[in-house]
Amino acid sequence: MRYSGWRVIREALTGHKGWGPVWRDPDPQPAYDYVIVGGGGHGLATAYYLAKEFRQARIAVLEKGYLGGGNVGRNTTIIRSNYLLDGNEPFYEFSLKLWEGLEQDFNYNAMVSQRGIINLIHTDAQRDAFTRRGNAMILNGADAEMLDRDQVRAIYPFLDFDNARFPIKGALMQRRGGTVRHDAVAWGYARGADSRGVDLIQNCEVTGMRIEGGRILGVETTRGFIGAKKVGVAVAGNATPLLPIAGCAIPSKCTCIRP
Ligand SMILES: Cc1cc2nc3c(=O)[nH]c(=O)nc-3n(C[C@H](O)[C@H](O)[C@H](O)COP(=O)(O)OP(=O)(O)OC[C@H]3O[C@@H](n4cnc5c(N)ncnc54)[C@H](O)[C@@H]3O)c2cc1C
Image (cartoon, rainbow, N blue to C red):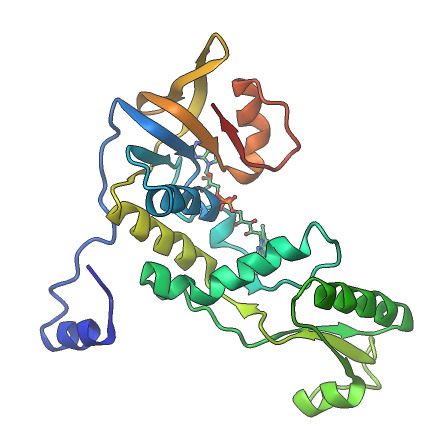
């Protein structure tokens, strides 16, 4: 089902009887080519791009609760690429470019709003740090502007610039930054993945991994064993208890693909 303005008008005039479930609720198959553990933004995006860009089939996302109910459903909603380090900035700039076309890509309103992001400067040392960061952003091809206090005042005339506990001396601004409803992003990826045949299996906690001779055979879950040729883990902080089961020694938060 494609969403559009016409569809909304048609449904409004016919009692909203034509909307179907946004994704299926399948039972797990005995085996898949790819099993992604974790139905947050990262797990669902992985499944979506595996199906869409890499044209892979037989993919399942296993989520112990409900889709988008992890960190992605409760964050601050900021999108930005205002980072200092060379390793970070291109990564986040690529992400920001993805945000800019994401809703059209998966035909779902994730409420992306590039209203701009401003980091206020309260001390001279902070101005030095933000100037350095702004220059790093520009050198990496992102947009960044240093604002003096009059420029900030022109945007926010109602702020107290002088008598506040932290006086405002300027700001680092990224106009292309903004906000997005991240749980809606998870649902958009879920809808896009489901429409490409990915099985999204909720209430299915992965409790173990079956490995023989160094190769993964599948995962043990609260809904039984599910075979898999490859297992991707995108469970945020839950990687710490989960990945040692698979014999992966990892930092506290990362994604691991085990062949
Ligand atoms: C308070 C806060 C504010 C943030 N602010 C921002 C922000 O403004 N902008 C921004 O871009 N990022 C922000 N982040 C970071 C961002 O939200 C996370 O990086 C992102 O949501 C992580 O996505 P994920 O898919 O890796 O993890 P999650 O969304 O946490 O998804 C992991 C999923 O794995 C499931 N899971 C765990 N263990 C298992 C298991 N054994 N079996 C099956 N499923 C399992 C969980 O139930 C969960 O649904 C913030 C994070 C927090 C906590």
